Image (cartoon, rainbow, N blue to C red; front, top):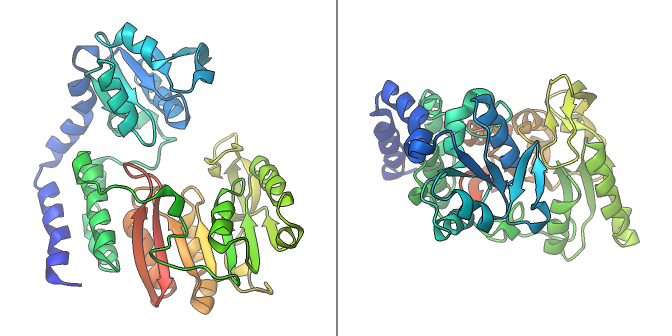
Amino acid sequence: MTTSQDNALNELLQELLAEPRHQTVARVAGEVDRIAGPFAGRVVVFGSGILGKRALVGLRGTGVEPLAFCDNNPLTWDTTLEGVPIVSPAIVTERYKDSAAFIVAIHNPSKPTQQLRQLGCTRIIPYPVLFWKCVGSMSCEDRLELPYRILERAGEMAPAYELLADEVSRQEFRAQIRWRCLLDYDCLPAPHDAGEMYFPDELLSLSPSEVLVDCGAFDGDSIRSFLRKTNGSFRHIYAFEPDSGNRRALDSFIEQLPTGAASNVTVLPYVLGRQNGMIGFSAEGFVGSRVANSPASEIVECRSLDTVLADAPEPPTFIKMDIEGAEPDAIIGAQETISRYRPALAICAYHRCEHLWELPKLLNKANPDYRIYLRRYAEECWETVYYAIPR
C-alpha cells in the first residue's frame, strides 16, 4: 500500500480526532434539536417500516409521541402503527409542514427527503441523527454507533484498511468513517447497483459447477440472484435459515424450481457460529431475525460451518453471509473450511459499525490468500459487503 493511501486515512482520523470529545458529545446530543428548532417535541415520521418502528421506540423512550407517520404506500393510509395514525405525505405535510419536524426513517432516504422539501418541509431529520439523540432507548438499533465511540477505536482501523485491494474499497472505507462521525452525505460515493449485491460481475464470475453456501437464506432472495448469474446451473446449494417462518417461504421457493435444481438444494435450520451448541434466537419471520438473548427469544441449534461441511460431498466454492451481526462468529467457525477450500466470500459488513474494521482482519486470518474488496449497494451505510476473492 502506498504512503499516500495510508496518509488519506491518517489525515481523516486526525481531522476527526481534533474535535475535543466534549464538543463531539455535545454536537451529537444536540443535532436533533438544532434541526428541529422550536418543533423538537413535534415530529412526524416518514416511513412506517422497520426503521419507522425503531424510530417510534426511540422517540417514546425520550418522551416524545409522534404526531403521525406518513408513507408512500397507499395500503398503509388510514391505518395506525402502535396507535399512531399513518397518512399520506400530501395530507400530513399540508397539516404539519409549518409546525413540525419530519424524521426520514427509510433506508434510502434521498428521494423521500427531496419529496418532503418539494412539499414545503424545511426541518428534516435523518434517521441516524435521531439515533444520536435517542441511543439510550434504541438498543434494537445496533448497526449505528456514536461518533466518539467510533473514534475510541481509531487505532484498530489502519490494519484493516491496509488489507483492502483497491482504491474503490479504500475510498468507501474512509467515507463510511467520515459519514458515521459527521453525517457528511457529500462524502459518500454513489452506491453500486443493488442487483449486483453478493455476486458482482466486476469482481468474480460464476461457473455452472458452483457450490453455494447461503448463510441467511431468508426466502431465497439471494439464491434467485445466484441463479440469474449462473443461468440456473450449479452443482449444489446449502441454504441455512433458522427462522421457521422464513424457512417455509424458502421451501416454497425451492419447490418451484425445476426438479433437477430443487434436488440439489439442501436447507439447513441452523444458526451459524463459532462452535456447536444451543443459542437464543429472535425469529421475526422477516429479514431482521437474529441471534438474541431477550426473554422472547427461542432456543435453536447453533452449528459451525466447519462441522456442517466437514463431510459434505461437495466442497464449497462460494460462501455468502447475511446473518444480522453473527458474521464474525460464523467466520471463526468456518476457518478450516475457508483455509482448505478457498471459496469466494461475500460477507455483510453493516450489521454492526465495528465490522467495518473487524471483518477484513478476520478474513485475512482465516486465509491470507485473498484479495479483499468493499462495496455498498444502498445509501448511507446499509447493504455494505466485504468480498474475499482467492488470488
